[in-house]
Length: 94
Image 1 (cartoon, rainbow, N blue to C red):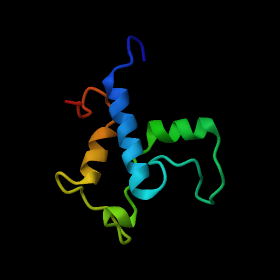
Image 2: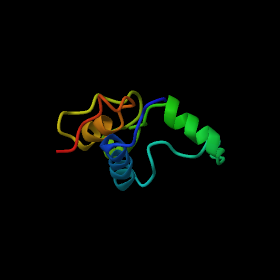
Image 3: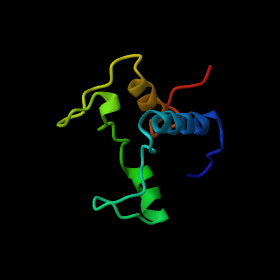
């Protein structure tokens, strides 16, 4: 990650995480494994780096099965745009 500096893209990522948390009551990258056991900080960092945020929650209209594509201008769409891994592609604050 050479030559990367802190900029507003980090803040946009943080806003996406906070809005997700306000909607469903936990962060998009939780700290628990499939058995409900707490994972290590290193594992959590790997989850953030390697996994996509899960929208499998009733708040986002999930009733089981596949997660549907976010509707334009929905909170899920906003969060998805905030959590794009590549900061150059992430939405920009106005």
